[in-house]
Length: 190
Image (cartoon, rainbow, N blue to C red; front, side, top):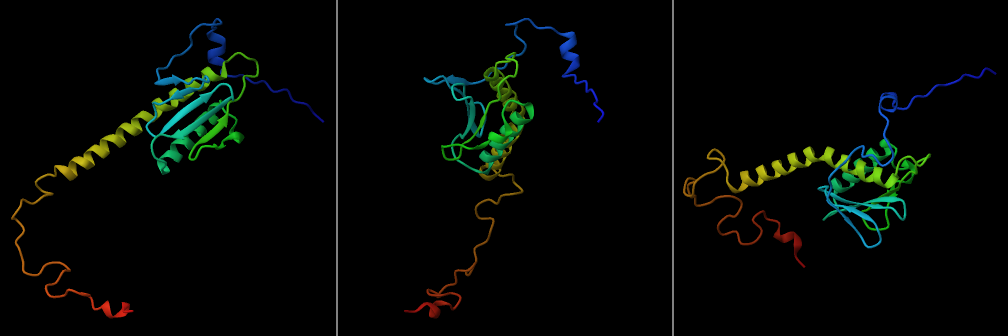
């Protein structure tokens, strides 16, 4: 049997050129976060889901913001897929939570304790939310445009009162047909 040595370099550009001192700020993010009484970090910036980082249980949980919908599940799926690809969570631990419509995963631990997993989790959740912002701003704009087109239509898409002439018989309601305009009333006698 022949043994082969493998040389692995992890992000060689940043590790060789830049050296950071312990406690030095490497990156920052701004989020709408509240801390609960038991120390959980609740993030409310996402349009569809609320994200809770639980340091005591070493978990990340995503809850539906208002109503559970397909968009909620899709947002939860994108969040945990993103965190899984970044190596923050253990992909095999992603599953439904104990609260209806929630999804949770276990945060991975740093193998050499060089990175605080909770800080990194919050930072990458913030990065995920920033990546999602263009999608939700486009969604809000489309929704506003749709409401505007229904409440204040263009001249081409609307008619003024009196432009459509009145006719004696119009539509499916015929004069004199009180019962069964389609002749079906005899089928449902008791």
